[in-house]
Image (cartoon, rainbow, N blue to C red):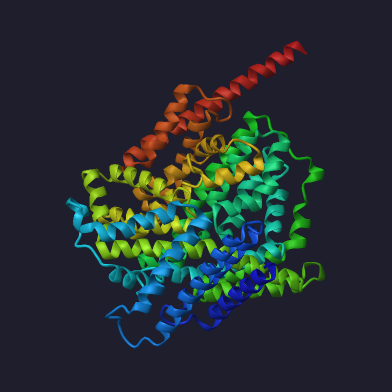
Length: 622
């Protein structure tokens, strides 16, 4: 079975490498072949992981696998010989369509749990019972044939835009991430962070922050980032004195933030580009400053925690030398530079850019014997890339069903109108409602699935209120990602708890404290579009300047510490200054800025006086 899984995974990656260079297959064929591979991988991996089960269990899985393959091949053949639009649904269409819908829901349940299949299932039921509902949720109702036509035969269902993007853009970046990992790139980025920050106070925590920012963008999901970087950083943090729950919380927040860090942003940026019709590079550049602010806040929290917890430094003998790390691993910068060159200079498609970046991984590792990848490593890269794509394929296929429900019934526009009505014309209230909705809907879902659900349910409400589409989509994108460490689900915190050996809820609550800036930054860029590089040069500079101070104020408020412990009155003033600086009025921003500068000066002067008094007492006693 392991050999079968290996063969399927390698063939899947090779197929997508081929289409990345020569172009995707027409119509629904690319999506159907991608889902075909993903379902085959899922059921074979499930079979392998349950070898001790009864014979009937394996027979059931074999039946599902055969049906999945048959349904996938059927839609490929139908699309290849299709000459026009589909006007009727044949019995074969009905059979394979119903089978594929049920299999997608079952496979998503197996891989991701019940949350997303339940949402899709409720949507399917809603499609049928619309005539029996009243008020804004009522619709004329649709037959089983119409649903199969929408969800299976059209590109507005399972094989819609989300799965198409997953089967073209996303997977090639997941393969790139896998090759960076097996070639030693992941270890290089961790060693680089260790060599720079390891010798400072709170070194391991700062390593977690920087490594997650560097590698988390390509790694796919917050959980994958926690597992890959956390296995090194969490034990190191505990070793130098961080409590277990704080070590897990720092890794959870940093790993979740990897999904908002350009250039790849967990591959969700490509779906966003399609959803709002803007170039990928434009979204990537717009997201850069908020992402840097997020990691600045996490870094400051980590630095203060290291003082409060009296964390020991890592001995110099245990930290790698920077020049040695660069000498051994500088080649791992080249694939990322190649990616950015093709994306931004050549303006190639994301698929073609990622393809050449993968080629660059091969080329640069061949330069030296000790970095040269073996055939076994190459095969592992192909296998790992395909395996990591399964969850994204299933999430986007199920999200396609939900999108089909929204398009068929008009539910999306109804939900947007409801949210706008509840806000009663107040943008702030609408933002708060959207934030809560985004966190709830995003809980327990991988990045791509969370964003897709939010993009079709709550983002339109913000656009209806007058926000630019890029602003609205980045707003919901942020909160969908923050749900990864928000209680009670907090999937990133649960992943970290297994490594830290700490209570996941305690980790999640602590993570919310460290990641509080993530809940504030979306409001900053909604009210100050300059943070997204929208507006004049002055608008951008002023917005960034104020936002940096707002982040400092927020950290002082949450930690109660600046150069020393801050009194409650000044702590409250620091929090108030952050609120004022987030407001759209320039006067209020300046007042908030003035209040925060006053707090900083008072605390700095007070600390200097305390140091002087302590020095004088020490001199007298001496």
